[in-house]
Image 1 (tube, helix red, strand yellow):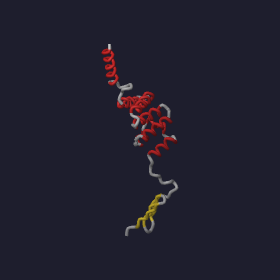
Image 2: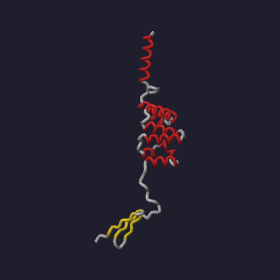
Image 3: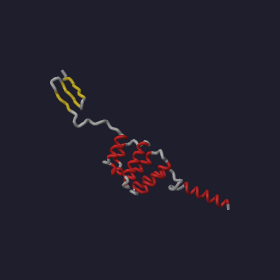
Image 4: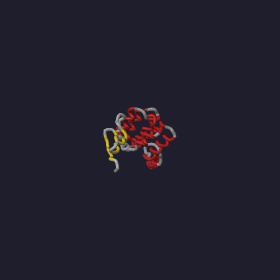
Length: 157
């Protein structure tokens, strides 16, 4: 009897370790299911798989990025922003990929999204609209102005 139970237990473990789902699934397998669910527009499953991936790999930014996409598509913008912020804090550095991601388009234009992106990916300050910008020819040379910076280039003689 003990041998049968042990044999059944070993068989069960072998079956579960070969599965792509369940508690013994690998992180890569779960990630694959989340990506596939996003591609198939099955956002509920994508969110579920992303949350499972977060449990397996809590320090990995890609799980949070997948969750942000799924939550945005499910209409839960606040949860999507929170997941996106965590992905960035965990190391996601591609602001162009974030802005171009079709699943995150519903977040664009939100003040919280703009604030998050501005804080996470600061840009050089633009020249204010009231600043003087231009090139002027004078009798002594060329004057180039950009805001409060002015450079005068003498004429060639």
